Image 1 (cartoon, rainbow, N blue to C red):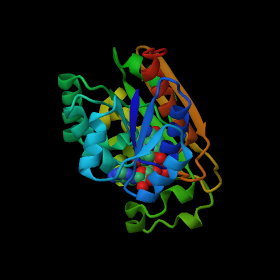
Image 2 (cartoon, rainbow, N blue to C red):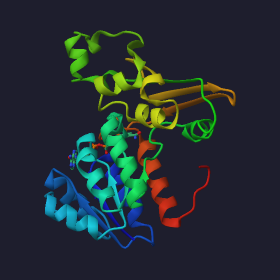
Image 3 (cartoon, rainbow, N blue to C red):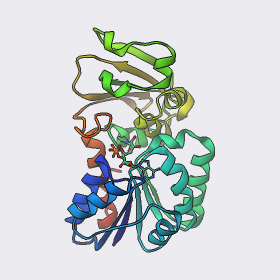
Image 4 (cartoon, rainbow, N blue to C red):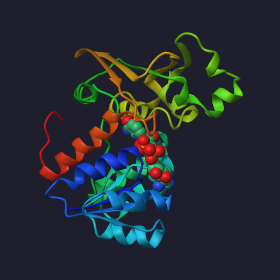
Length: 272
Ligand SMILES: NC(=O)c1ccc[n+]([C@@H]2O[C@H](COP(=O)([O-])OP(=O)(O)OC[C@H]3O[C@@H](n4cnc5c(N)ncnc54)[C@H](O)[C@@H]3O)[C@@H](O)[C@H]2O)c1
């Protein structure tokens, strides 16, 4: 099996390492909008080849692989997911927040159905998505996600700058936003992909309520997922270790991509 990874950062690195040790994977193509990052990763990973970050090279690579992995940014999802699915190619998307856009989500969902390229969105940094998916087969009355991260994650968020919220002066856990997932994803596009994953699985972007908390003393990225309905109640708490290279990303998110790749390679799905 051949793989194209778009985005050679924290998640891309963990995935390329894991893929390199899978005997079913013959070749890993790597590309990144920052050329040096992709080239550096090629030097470090077995079975890997560098792909120039231009449309022709990427399209050519796409046609030569069985799976494309986006581990880059929402911008990359908007650009590459429809092209990939249009070609009937399988794609794994990590920047799930991009699917807050109804137009993009509906187009990609439609293409995957029509052209039979599969769209994989791993659970990422949140636990409890398995139960939420099952519960959604019937009725869910309420879905809530309480996410707590440290101040450094929220630096340079335009919404907080506009509101003149001084993260450095916080002395206790403080709610930065509480409201529908749709709004949170628009205001904090780089900080909470899991809000999109949970919304798509459960009750949608309007009804999923997200509480975003900044805790000056925390060293984890935490998510408490609560869902209620006739099935009972789900409470899933995850206290994630952040990546040193990108504290906004949790190590578990990269591992969810590795786990998804293992399932794809083995064509075996347990706990879905
Ligand atoms: N689903 C989840 O739970 C979850 C969790 C963590 C991170 N993420 C998302 O996954 C993505 C990757 O995370 P990461 O921690 O590896 O990020 P990172 O910043 O460590 O690495 C991203 C890499 O992608 C490259 N890149 C950015 N935009 C690009 C584009 N348009 N085309 C090609 N390359 C591009 C960057 O140069 C960088 O090397 C991010 O969008 C992040 O928000 C999702």
